[in-house]
Length: 120
Image (cartoon, rainbow, N blue to C red; front, side):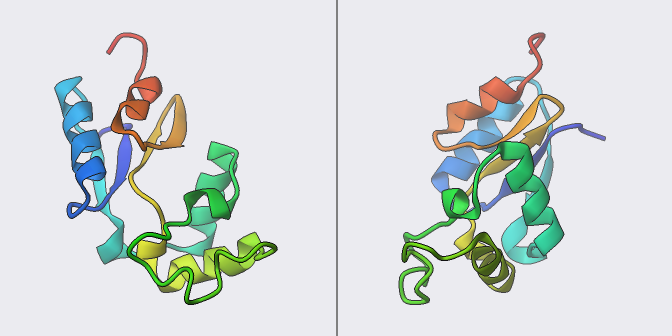
């Protein structure tokens, strides 16, 4: 079993490029198609803590209802954003890569290289 996971959207070019980049470097990650599996509040909170970012930092606006739902307004809490992300998984920016060395939103794709062990 791989110790690297990618939260992946196969319809996203950056997500596909990140997955290909990991594979080019000899990593066969666990691929989680989060649009199919969805998110839990605990899962998102854990990822946010491990990345050291707020929910706003992983909020996807383009191609979503984020603005219509008022999620882009100043002062919207992480709890409100996380609840919206659980209700609509496409509100989470992608891809997120988890490895033993860290967790990151890999936009651009080459940010995933920072998560690979030095031997890769």
